[in-house]
Image (tube, rainbow, N blue to C red):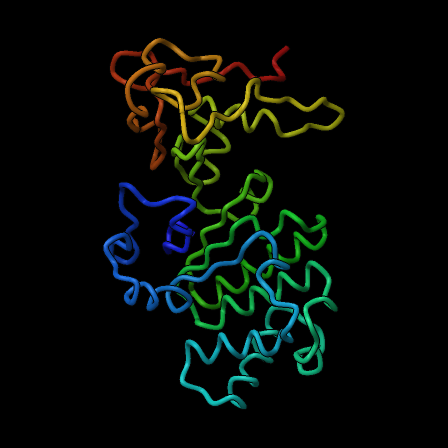
Amino acid sequence: ESITRLIPTDNGEITGGEIIFDGTDLTDCTASELTEYRGNRIAHVFQNPQGALDDVYTVGEQVVETVRAHRDLDREAAREEAIDLLDRVGIPDAADRIDDYPHSFSGGMKQRVVLAIALAGDPDLLIADEPTTALDVTIQAQILRLLAEIQDERGMGLLFVTHDLGVVAEIADRVVVMYAGKVMETGEVYELFENPAHPYTRALLDCLPGHGEAFDTIDGSTPDPTDPPDGCRFHPRCDHAVEDCRSGEQPAFHPVGDDHDAACVLYGDDHQPPLSFPDKHDD
């Protein structure tokens, strides 16, 4: 919502930074200019498909409305396009089900309808915000495969927001690890999983369960976003924190590998970088 400036102003506002999309800073765009990006260039799929659909209207009416908002089509042509979209996202008997209401669809099918609506404007970038969290693992895998197929077919970018590292490993090419609103580490997915540099990234990976093993957890709790700690926001929960972590601004990024960077003072000039962390399985 922040990227396309959909967040309600009474809930928050953008106070600094840039949002660069295809060379344009979206924070400088007027409201009318942003309408050219929303849906046409950038589309969203949100975590709760029920909240994205209106039970008063059929799924067809909702897809058709979106198609006509982005394309110069009459209602009949837009309906045919809507059927094609519903069919492409895996709605069985799309030509018949287009006149059904959202309540008659399962959670996984509703998410497919929401995806069809998002694709109606043929976006260059699809932002998928926790789109599989509420789904069981079988349906989750189907949605992930569908997203990968459509991304490949259309050549669009996919920004996938998730807390599920298993999903990250399956779908991502590049990973940005965030904590309390700040980027901790960035890198290619294989490099980051094989050689995690930031203590937070390593702690996350250590929380992944192994066969027959107890779950690991990260001690402490996430800070209040309205009153974050000074320095690195992870330092109150970090086993490797030093004094420099506890003051000043968020640490700068340091290269830790090929196209791999971490925002950690332990990789700065004044510190010996912890190139390897104790493995939780060593003992």
